[in-house]
Length: 419
Image (cartoon, rainbow, N blue to C red; front, side, top):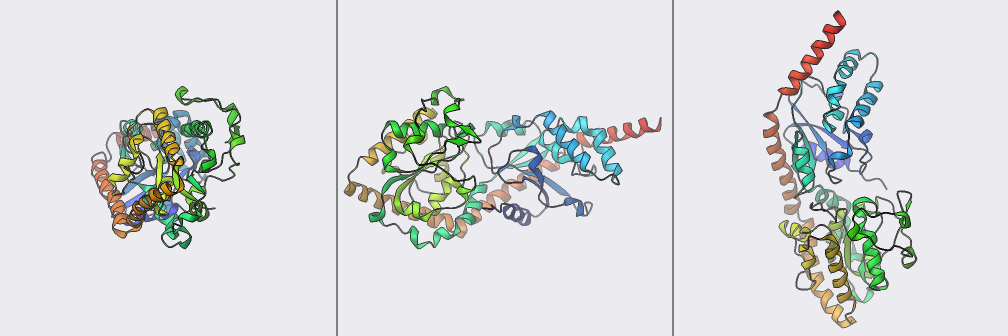
């Protein structure tokens, strides 16, 4: 399926009271430098009418500063230079004369080729969706201005909008066949904990009470050849795939919901993108059970349930042991979730009915809050407030160090040509 995230970025552009020059990755979800491009063709905009503010949208994926090297930026600028028409000779000369300087500017240099030399700031705004972030600190120490907002809250309201009307999502406990619903596709990189989690499901003989599946391959790599980055998560993976049905979903699966899955299961165990990390970065995966009116347990970084409570949602403490959310060690947090799953699965049917009744009362509250206009407007206001703050910082760095440097390079270049 196509995930139309450009609608989000056009929306953010339109609600701002200033002219944003937005750069985002296309296709969405990509991290490739070559896929970082303009939302629209800004060369058609009359640039001197008013100030324009460049904004890199890095709000879909976690920040990783070292993913982009100086050589990567140089190659990207050269690629843009090669594609620049010969009749635009001044643009080509300017880029060629400045490529050494631009290549040291990280992502700012990669998008600089789209900006003219009369609209230059010493800092660049970058949109993100994470808190408690050491990566953001690295970005901000390298001349970026971070703008936080929970982008997934806006896009999830769009992707899951039918969940508030879907009659098949009305809970019927007699139809529930499995205690837990678990979506598990990718397991490379930050998601390697999912291999450990699936292994523990088998070890604790929980797979029979879970509606889930498992992909033997991720990014063309077989799970038996995988080497864990965190040794504390390392487990023997032999025979893991034989215990679960095969997963055949693609990367867009989380942009939709399956009402049949929700009608057959009681509690979703959400496997978030970040788990073995310190950052708070919750995606549409967490918001899907909320939109569908379902209770959940959250496999994410510590403090993620408190993150949700800070946005007004109710969690399930007192019914589900949520102390796992306070555990900083990832392996211990994983084991605590497994232990609570074991406790719930061991209940008899009448006990589960009582538990589900109380859980679903909370879930209904969360669903109504999520789809309420006031809540959605609060997310938009969060963006506008943080964007306004960033504008104030950016204006302090307009046409200073970089402008002087660029003008000097430009002057030196033409001097050398006149000799």
